[in-house]
Amino acid sequence: MKKAALALLVLAAAGAAWASSRHGAFKAVEEAAWMNTVSQKKGFVDYYFEIGQDGSVILRDESKDGLTIRRGRIKAMYAKDFFREIKSSDILNAQTGTGSKMVFYKGDQLQISAYINGELRRFEAPLNKFGEAFSYAMTEARKAAEKLPVDEKVAGFLSAQPLVGPMRDAFIVRVGQDYDFKLVETYDLQKNKHLMAAVKQPHRLIPLESARDIKTISDFITSHKIYGLRDLFYVKTTRGEFRFRIQYSLKEAEKPTQGEDGSGRRSPQSVPETLRPAKPAGKSAAGSGK
Image (tube, rainbow, N blue to C red):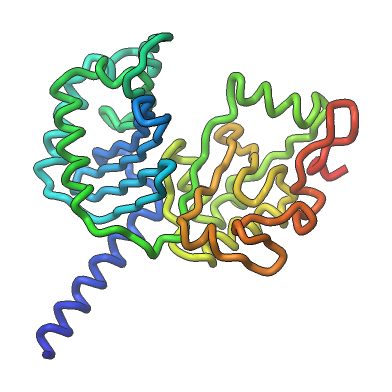
């Protein structure tokens, strides 16, 4: 019995160590990649897959049928094969970080961030453009990850997307040209490890292990009078401007809290004035602090 109990403690400690190590950002010296596969074949289903050189993985599949999250480690050989194909992929080693897009392409579209020679790069292209060997290595790694047990403990994920191009244009239309987008200093951003990790590695899903983690972000939004809502907000940093998003696990989304409705999101009446959507252009913008 004592040996069994000790074994369980060792496994629990290992799991906790893995989870805490992935709260922060991957190091540039590590081989790591995170990607979304958008499938038009199944009604625009969005699959998220993250893999590290040690075989640590996160798998998040969301569709009309529900949400599934799996985390843990797969055999290192799958990671080794995957990163070997990344290094030999013509698209991933191109000089520019933008892959080709096919207007009438009906297959899977891959959006991937990966460290290549110590540099974090982002690519988007039809999956078939990455090559058969790459697709095979990715599929095998995913299949191994799909055998991991479902993770029902994580509260949600935080991600940051650079506020550029059409997304920024739409943001300016909402807040108005005279919106005072105040800078949040790195010193303040570093006080929340999840926000900092998301900024360092855009598009990556940063695990939020508990409701407390989510609350620290909500408190940050309120204290800095940041424009947006609890699960979709905008921050200007020394690294650029970002749109942050929180994607809840099913258990967290279904858990009502004080001042919130049954969806787990704040009702309009409970959202502070500084967090409500901006008024039409020409009127004072919400969240400007004026």
